[in-house]
Amino acid sequence: MDTKAKKLTNEVGAPVAENEHSLTAGPRGPVMMQDVWLMEKLAHFDREVIPERRMHAKGWGAYGTFECTEDISAFTKAKVLQKGTKTDLFVRFSTVAGERGAADAERDIRGVAIKFYTEEGNWDLVGNNTPTFFLRDVHNFPDLNRAVKRDPQTGMRSAQNNWDFWTLLPETFHQTTVVMSDRGIPASFRHMNLYGEHTFSFYNKDNERFWCKFHFITQQGIKNLTDEEAGALIAKDRESHGRDLYESIVKGEYPRWTMYVQIMTEEQARNHYENPFDITKIWRHKEFPLQKVGVLELNRNPENYFAEVEQSAFTPAHVVPGIGFSPDKFLQGRLFVYGDAQRYRLGINYNQIPVNRPKVEVHDYHRDGLMRTDGNYGGAPAYSPNSMGDWAAQPDVMEPPLDLSGAMYAYDPQDDPTDDCFRAGGDLWRVLKEDKRELLIGNTARNIASVMENIKYRHAVHCYWADEEYGIRITEAMGLDLNRVLELAEPHSHEKLIQATLN
Ligand code: HEM
View 1 (cartoon, rainbow, N blue to C red):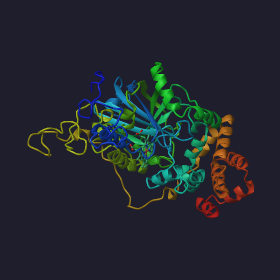
View 2: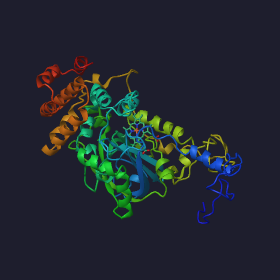
View 3: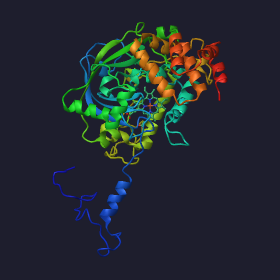
View 4: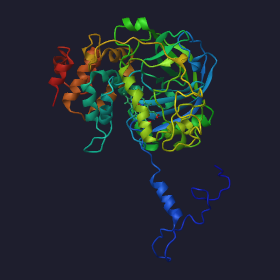
């Protein structure tokens, strides 16, 4: 649109005579319906807010590139991951629980959604700044958000609801430990690592499949804020993460992350000591070392926040040949929900919005729908197959078959004898240096302070099961009775612990 003329027009380009004084019947009289420009202005204003994302509502974005610097063609044929390929991308960072107006420097996980505009179509990697997640069954996800968002009665955020929910689901333990650690409040988006979290798959040109996890390690170094620092920062700047990202790009200090993958063969997965497709578990680096892939750089700010950041839309369902999914139950649920959310939030043609539009031509036969803004494929055939030979399916990109077995049932992963919800959290405690342990204990004690005592006991027992010292120190910090914790910790049964600590 030509904005240079600097002359006001209405929505169809006709000149507007007056923009400050309403048309009234006499100098003190009522406003006329005939002031159609005023009606148009108000009607547009009334509709300017689109639904915010159910989670990750507060976010910031930037454009950049990904350059693949290493040869990983043995694992994947994805063109974006071939050595020497440089791909444009857009990233949206977010906090999770807060609404659109929330402060950036809150204790929370951070979302990171990356849209790679590859020459084989868009690949979206929709991850977080933590290597694992709270939950592993999609059923629990809406409930997690109800627990961490506002209480239905008071309209306030509630530590009681958070901790009640978390401690009833022991698989949340590792992630809760991460969120309460020094990493729970990153100093900025630039100073944190980014993770795909799920197990995804790769397949190479010979159609051999590998399982993989994505890691992006910050080249700026990890930097976090204490509760006190975050409180002081929020008091003077609610947009600290967005400002930091924007200004660093303006200054030419482009943030960079090195991308690594962990690879597991299908054979290794079959023999792994725990479920390699459980998003609450890590793959230990010693067993599955990080392999370097390339460098992601952010180097251009959006021109318009609403058009590019608010209207950006990501879904893990968008993959390209050479990259696929896995039996991860949680990932399977996410494959449905994002497109569904975006069709509601932005409309069925949301991929025509410039920030979401792929750089390659799209030939999908989808037609019509609200806000179709391209030529709607003109007179091209509307059905497939057709005798014109248009837009045939491409069997050469079919991924290798995957053997699945088992009876249909609502399985509880805790019934799997290899399942240990506390190992990863215990491992994390054991690698933390003393200053980090102190922060973890202090942050947790402050965060849980207002919560009912039975729930504190549940958390103390979880910490004790993860690591004896972790359990003893959190018990002291929360002012609980260690004998009671030891009593509850024996026998090692989560079900019995819950029974003993219900209200
Ligand atoms: C089954 C579990 C999950 C469900 C049902 C779910 C659902 C959603 C929904 C509905 C949105 C809003 C989408 C929109 O309106 O555009 C969203 C955003 C997001 N989710 Fe999830 N989510 C799940 C798990 C996860 C996990 C495990 C991660 C990280 C690995 C994650 C990362 C994100 C990110 C980064 C965004 C923001 C995307 C953006 O910037 O637009 N989510 N999620």
